[in-house]
Length: 115
Image 1 (cartoon, rainbow, N blue to C red):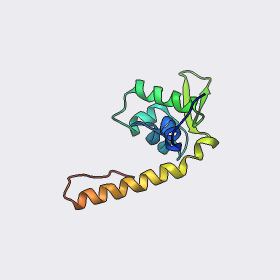
Image 2: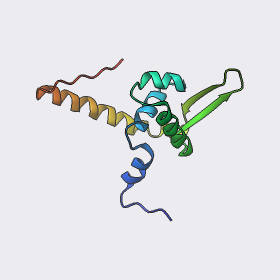
Image 3: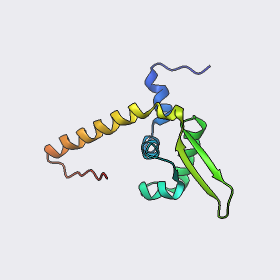
């Protein structure tokens, strides 16, 4: 039996790490192909992206559509269950923007590139 000391441990197990929350955030706006995600997250390797997507899929946060065509086409999307994480993702984005604003006020050379 798996046990957690705090509920946040279960959240971090699924959305923790450098990339998962970012991937989910990008997919909240609609389904995307692997190549689209690679362009939107230039610092992630294809191997790590695929690994993170598989883990998110295993945890029921992300779904995958396989199109039977040549060349093969795969799209990833946020599942209904995954959409329940939207509040968490929004709070993280808001906190991050505020954190960057404060760091700028303290003189740090930092910038936020948002659409």
